[in-house]
Length: 479
Picture 1: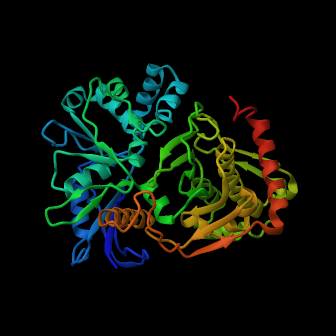
Picture 2: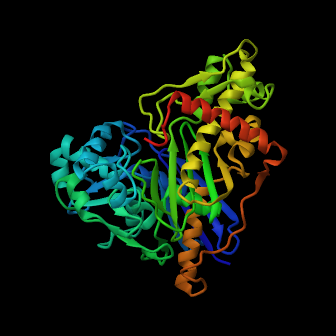
Picture 3: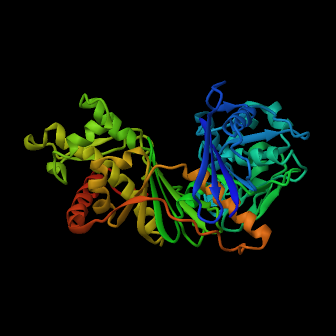
């Protein structure tokens, strides 16, 4: 038996799990919040190190042989030629970069050109877009920028003592907007297009490769982004999709090929194992439920769920198109939500509550259909997020998605995925694991939900939703 650690540096905290290399059993855990300093979109990376040190305190890493690093995606850490940060890291979906995204799309010749080049169309959160913003808004900082890292790259580099060699993994690289998951190579011309000049980019190493070893002999694996680490921690494979219920929603699935999608609805990412991870995002998921709860004067989502369960599938003909913040899937950035099917018998709180849950899930089913329409096999869905535990979600999801739904028990899946990566790299270095095959860890405890006899009812509800969507926004998925 060996011992490895996985750390996940999220936007708000660092979590560390220490795991058995053979089974994946979590032996110890650590946690620390990030220091709350500065504006949310500008973070001094040193805060990540401080949080890491606090989380690892008390001998947590004693006996650990290897560490894997997961960190928030899309965080851009610009360094000067000496390796010092030029400015605080640009993190999250910074709205300052929205104009820059539009500029980049036009500069390369449109959405299709970007989809063909790197598998995704620039969005405000991506590093390539933040580079464009930096060049336009802070030209002196842009001029000084000589090296580009993401959060997990920077943390790995720091753990190794800031060596000359800087590395990343294909999963993290695929989210930058200047690396192609299809070709496995960088597009330095896109860096120059965004920043105004070339910059040094980290070497992309393989999923089971080690980034290096510390002077104390601690192996550090490649690291990856939170999305890829969580997928790896869950153990998803071909035929699996993950539906994540946050304020917004996302659907991702494992696929053997990179997908180019000129509509921009699919972001073609690489995963942490050598496969691909196409992702489709919706802007309205749990925010739809929270808005409905507020409208109905309910204190929380549990109360909304309890009320919705007093209705029946189809909400007596009430349909809610949940486009409260506009929508990305389909591309309707300036639209608003719609309530259809209002009749005297449907104008009751429980039916509106049910329609909110069904509308949210149907919107995510639309995202699933985008992937299925491109040949992505989806036979099982992992449903993540606190809202996945709500009875109204679990009652409707299998029939509306048309397949088995798995609700894993809450766990630090990104940190577990990072630990699994560390175990893989350690095993390869010791000659006990194949570099093409990750270690098999026991699956997460989960609740399994089947569509059963409700499948036909669910599909009728879905058809009703699609009919209202097409009447309200004709051709939204074909424009």
